[in-house]
Image 1 (spheres, rainbow, N blue to C red):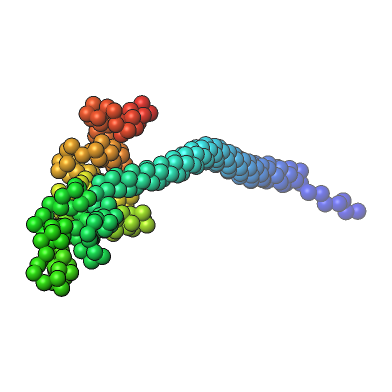
Image 2 (spheres, helix red, strand yellow):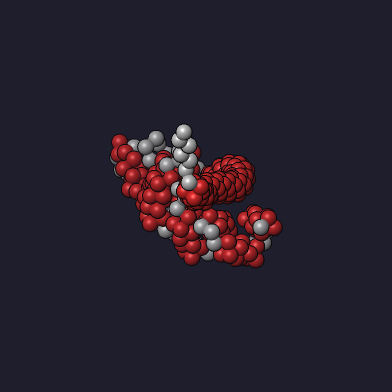
Length: 324
């Protein structure tokens, strides 16, 4: 009987040893592969966390900046609203003061117009009395107005004394028929010298009244031209200072403050003794104040008080000096 063949112990052992070595060699490679993947995953996780943290920081910074900007805008908005409120309050005060100033100027204009009208009537009293003189004895309807200006100032007719109608009935001519026409023929010759002043006074008064009517109507440009022409045409007239004053007042009404100052200074220089000088200086001070020259306005007001202490303009100047 043949015995079974068995592998040699040496070969088996060698094969077992080879397999064991192969198994041991494969374990570190697999472990190394697993370690690299884990590390890679951890690195990715760390990067993701860093990115997330960076994003959160950026969001917080942006939020803080937005809050800071919002607070600044709110504060700026509040300041703007306060400024708007102040501007509205100042605008209201300005409108009230402007209205009061307009009313005051209107009252002053009415007062000056009334005073000028009264003064004009007083100054024109003798000339105005001329139409009432036709009741002179021995005068007919035609020559009476011509002889009136002389009779208004006195009983004796100054311009035509030799041609007085009264002596003619005493020494009549030879023919009775010629006695009637003689007074009528002589009277116009005697009346012509006296008629010229009356006509001049009438034209002068009409020119002044025409310019004053323009001022009353609010046509200040026309009033400036009318009063300026009046002063040039009648520089020696008693109404010339008033006309020059109204030139400056009309320019002030047009807000031509520099022109008003020049016109009133011309009045002060040309008519220093006029009663209009204090009012002219007051108008100068007001114009200077409107131009922003507070120092010049104060000096002019002090001059009014010093030079014309009893005038109405001085009282107004004191009030303005006390208010400023």
